[in-house]
Amino acid sequence: MSQYLTAALYKFVNLPDYQALQAPILETCVAHHIKGTILLALEGINGTIAGKAEDVHAVLAYLRQDTRFSDLEHKESYADHHPFYRMKVKLKKEIVTMGVSGVDPNLVVGTYIKPEDWNAIISDPDVIVLDTRNDYETHIGTFKGAVDPKTTTFREFPKYVAENLDKTKNKKVAMFCTGGIRCEKASSFMKQQGFEEVYHLQGGILKYLETVPKEESLWEGECFVFDQRVGVKHGLEVGDYDQCYACRMPLSPEELKSEQYTAGISCPHCYDKTTEAKKAALTERQKQVLLAKQRGEAHIGAGLKKT
Image 1: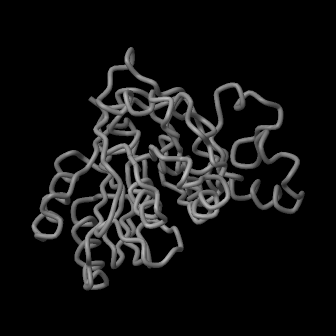
Image 2: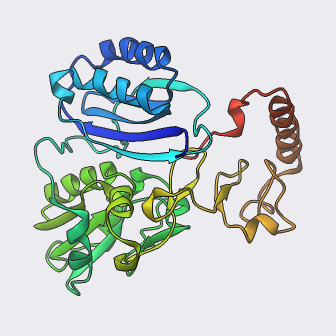
Image 3: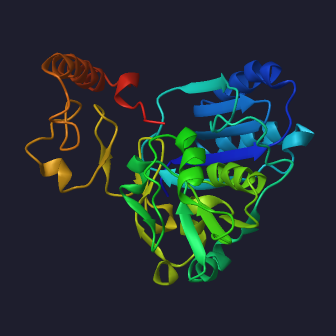
């Protein structure tokens, strides 16, 4: 088995003392050699962490000692290399940023659909299947027949709904996202807007790929993840995509062979959009990344992800 365990977690729960939680959570993660990112806000907790299995489970056990996190769920996957370079615990206004006040999944949310029941829902011709992720994520995979809103950030989702969906006509809407958090908030927003039948995939794409056999799956491609794995396949195996660290777009094996691809500097998606000054700066950064690797160190600038 691969040596590094990755755990994705989140929970919408009222945390009036979320600022006071930052330091002890960070200290616990550091003490267990855990790396990744955890976000804390009044509305809850969201994060992905990685390390040795026993250390990850120790941090999860620490979190669940707080009664508000006692039923905190997480999704697991393994990798041969550590998917993160450092540990961060950040304070935010929202654990997933939509930018609309008053949206609270703790008060109202759509109907949760278990992964094993998801195929039946999205195969219903009366259901609009909506991918709530961003364009660079949908680029490498999505569910068969899903609508891609082509958003660049989750903040654009409310505008997409206002301009493209009608609560009097679109009676049934089923949504999905990577781990469940975005579509949970999106479903709360849509219920607030008067949409009646709103469904969302419980546990997100990751739980679906972990649970549903490949031969029964309606998923096409890979699922983008916000760490060094870039994408995962069925069974949460590490995928074939890499990432352009100039523009952050995921790259297929074919795109990596392009003459427009230079590691850390450009790819077919950004080659004609990057100024010579920017390419020079990226070239220098790539030199530092390679030097760090030669010294056996992690250069944190090599692994930053688009969010």
